[in-house]
Structures are given as C-alpha cells and as structure tokens.
Image (cartoon, rainbow, N blue to C red; front, side, top):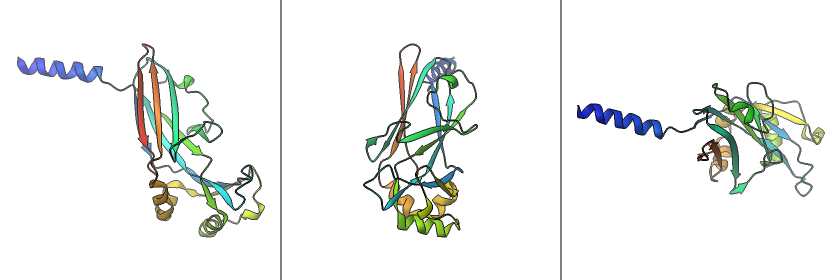
Length: 192
C-alpha cells in the first residue's frame, strides 16, 4: 500500500515539474558560409564567417503564449535580425515570431546564424583553398555569400578554430511564458 502512495506522489510531482519546452542541441549539417563585412568599415582586413547553431524544440505544453530567444556571444547580448537570424530548418523561412508554432504538436527545428564572427582575410583564403572553392575574396561584394562545407565536417577539420570559440562562454536562452503568467527560462551553452 505504501508503495502505491509513493508511486502516486512521484507521478504527481513529476507531472507538476514538467518543463514546457525540451531543447536538444544538434551538430548541424547546414553549410558554413563566408560573407563580406563591408558594412563594418573599420575592419577591412576581415570577413564574416557564419556557423549554424541548430536546436530541436519540443513544446510540451499547450499553455505557452510566448517563446523568446536570447543569444549571448562574448558576454554580449545579440539582437535578432541585426546580429543573427533564426530559420525554420524545414522551409528555410526566417522566424521573427514563434507565435505560429505555439499550437503545433510537432517539434520545431531551428537554425541560428550569427552574423558577427570575424576571421582574417588570410584565414578565409586558407579555408577557400582547403575546400577547393573557385570563388575569390577579391570578388566578394556586400551581400555575397561563399559556401564552404557543412558544419559537422568543418567542426571536425578545423578543431583549433572551434576550440577558440569554445573558450568563451557563449550561450542561448529560451524563455517561455505560460498563460497563467509563469515564466520558464532554459539556458544552453553553445556547443561549438
């Protein structure tokens, strides 16, 4: 009899402590890209490199009324749209609001592309040679993109660059608000 009550108590406590969102970081197969940073006039000897961060989000509650993402690089809060973009991996559309996704029972896979990782043009040229791309940095204009390889491969083949990224406590926070006013915040260290 005591075991039944204990099991019932464990079940009730586990139900009450159910998290409204489950977050699974994924080592992405999306492409690492290089773009011009001409908009940052003071850094003409560098280019932007974009590493895709991928997450699978499973909404565990139908009581969620908002989902927000806060992205921190080098202890600096980045601004959505200006500093990074969030894409729906399935259709490649930019996500400006999660409102259309809140009623879905299906997991959401998002890709976050940060726009402010700079590398020297010298290092960029080495990467272009390494991945046999015929594109030249000299021809790169504002808005142009050079595709390298998928992130999973890049990560394995450029460990020193990835280890440099890991030295800083970069993180992402997911903030969920429920219709009863409760707020749930889940932080994830970015696993470069």
